[in-house]
Structures are given as structure tokens and as C-alpha cells.
Amino acid sequence: MTKSRLLDRYSETRDDMVRLLIDRGITSPDVLHAMAQVERHLFVPLPLRNHAYDDAALPIGEGQTISQPFTVAVMTEALKVGNGDKVLEIGTGSGYQAAILAAMGVRVFTIERIPSLLKSARSILENLGVRFLSKLSDGSMGWKELSPFDGILVTAGAPDIPKPLVEQLKVGKRLVVPVGSQDFQQMKVVTKISDNNDFKVTELADFKFVPLIGKEGWPSGRSLGEGMSSNGREG
Ligand code: SAM
Image 1 (cartoon, rainbow, N blue to C red):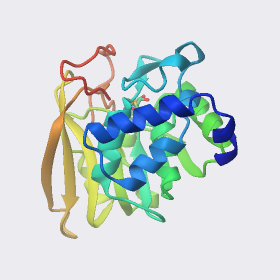
Image 2: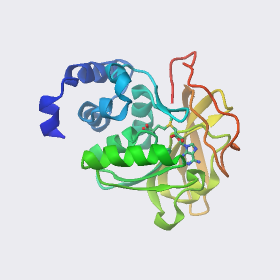
Image 3: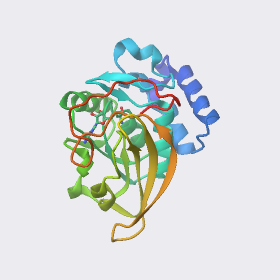
């Protein structure tokens, strides 16, 4: 990625984006470094490239979005993972969040339910030389065969904390998941505290995500728009 960064005409706007993240309270050097490195413009549709470093969610097709940079930073920071950790992401979407985790040295496993999005994300990530494992599936059930994980990130809004995901965490590790209605969710940081799947929850701010569709999510049917949330925090 270093080589393309030298030629990258968006590097200044990306640095501006990182400064904004610092102003908004992101402090993790690993997260900020990854967000300064990963070329978000490669993950957004061509006509929207000039907006790639706006602090906004953008449409990626199929009624889905690439999350707002601030949202990605908050979730990644809350996960508290680093080099060599094994992390499961639910909702591959554009592949951007997966690339951020990989830039932090994380071993990335990612699940998407929409075939065209997974195909496109795989192609972008492979072109960038990102190492990851992905599958097309209902991620609300996790990826049991590859568990336990050092962290799990759900990048779509769930009606409740998906219990299979807690089961697939190592003790002491975190699941970061937006939970609430289909219109607004509160970001929850769920720490597994025992082998019996007991957990404690801390709550961050409210966000607006597209819905997690699946057995431990919402039934498919109603498709949400991609409107801007009133608090400006979009998934
Ligand atoms: N992390 C993505 C990125 O970096 O671009 C953004 C994710 S987008 C806000 C939410 C994604 O979750 C959508 O691509 C959607 O199709 C996916 N999704 C929703 N329910 C899912 C499920 N049960 N399993 C896997 N993916 C799901």
C-alpha cells in the first residue's frame, strides 16, 4: 500500500479525514494509522470518489452503505484488537472495514449475505493484497468452525445481542454491535466474562445502521433507506 500511497491524489484529503477523527475523540494510534493508510476511495463507487473522505456513509449498491469513517474508527477502537488477533466481521459491505483491520495486523474473517457486494469486496481486497477469509452466509450466526475469536464486529443494526456471537468469543474479548430499532441503534461493547457465556455490556453513542438480516437479526423484507441520522453517526 505504501507505493500506491506515494501516487495517491487523495492522500491530503485522507489526512484531513484523520485530523477530523482526532478532533472527534479517536485516540488509538493503531486505528488512526490504519485509517491514514487505507485508500477509502477504492471502496466507494466511482461517481462518489470525490466524497470518499467526507465523514459520511455512502451508498455502495443493493441498498447498503460503506460506513462513515467516524463510525468505523469508534467500532475498531472499541474492539481493542491488534497484531495477530483473529477478528470476525459481520457485514463485509464494501470491504473497507476489513481492510482497516488488516492494516492493523489483524487476521480478518468476514461474512456478507449479498452475493454482488461480497464479490466486489473480494476483488478490491485481493487487488490491494489484503489477506482475509470471507464467506457468503447469514453472519448473525457467526462462523462457528473458525471460532473462538479475539473480537467480533457487527456492522449492521441488530434487534438484540446475537448470542451465537458471544459464544464464539474468547473469554475477556469483545463483541461490538449496534443494537436497537430498525431506525436507531445504540453501540454496545459486549465483553465475554466466563466460559458460560456470561457477559457485561457498556454502551457508546447512538448510530444509524442498515439492518442485520438473519436468524439473530431482522427478518428480510423491509429495506431501509440510507438517510443521515439526526446525530450524524451513520453505519
Ligand atoms: N463493513 C462494511 C464496509 O466496511 O463497507 C459496511 C457494512 S454495511 C453498513 C452493512 C452490511 O451488512 C451490508 O453489506 C449488509 O448486506 C450486511 N448484512 C446485513 N445482514 C447480514 C447478515 N446477517 N450477515 C452478513 N452480512 C449482513
